[in-house]
Amino acid sequence: ALARDNTQLLVSRLWELPAERAGGAGGPLVAQLPEPTFRLPREKPPPKPRPPTRWEQFARLKGIRRKKKTSLVWDEQAKEWRRRWGYRRAGGDPSRAWLAEVPAGADPEEDQFARLRREKRERVARNELNRLRNLARAHRAGRAVPAAPLHPTGHQDRDELRRVARVARVSTASLGRFQPRLPKESAEPPSRNGGKKRRFEPLLGNLAAERSRQLELLRDMGSKKPVLDITRAVNKQLRQEEAEAAANKGKKQSKRGKRGRQQQRPGRSGKKSGARRQPQQRKAAGGGTGG
Image (cartoon, rainbow, N blue to C red; front, side, top):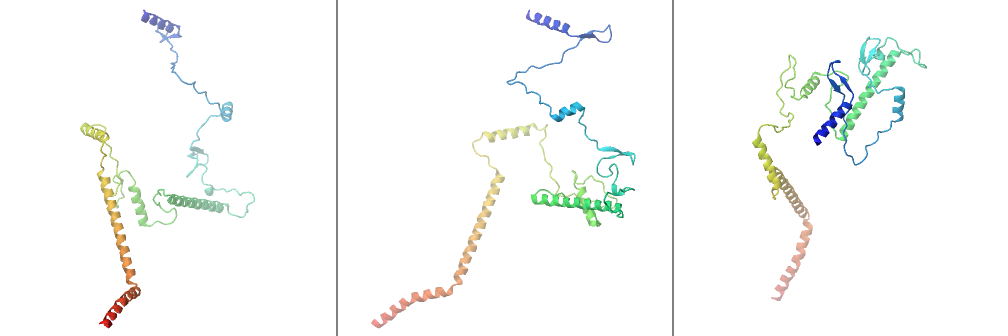
């Protein structure tokens, strides 16, 4: 009876929902189900929505939407899409323009193109100085400094180019094994001091080895005796022996120093021995007179 009443209630609720014909007038009647809701018990009431800031209210009023600035813009002079910043940016380099504007208050006889080139060289030199300062600051702080690249200006000799090419080749994950080489470049032997790759246990396969490792771990955790780390114990013993040897060496050097200082004082020892011998000589002289 209870199941029948619940079924009748469910069917009656379905007929109360808005319905429409699927596939035309002769199609089946389909009911539109409401959005699902979840009623979960809570200890405290749900948090209230955060009130909008003044900028959010102003943006909603004016219809302003957040939009990320694109990195490419249309260059009217070159008639193509170019970067907004950096090398070959839109608008080109001002020092390479065919027309240079004379600023207000400048000398009309001054070459503006030379001034733009000079300012660019100064900016490049300033950036290079800042880069070197950053490297020096990182070196003083103990952080890793990247390898020295090619010098930004000047002529590079053959050895420097070969060194930089070798560093760039072995900087890959395969240590340069699969990198293409130049036609007359000699093949170098693989480096023995290559990076060590991490080794992970297989996820599937050797179940017996995994079972033995787990049992050994549980056995060590359940045992009352402390686990003996052989490598750590051997290293500790070696450090103790080295410390004892250094202490014994220091004691021997201190003893040798005392002996040397005693040998450097012969006068005091001679006076003391002579003072001790005088009473014996007096006794001997007194015994001779009595006889």
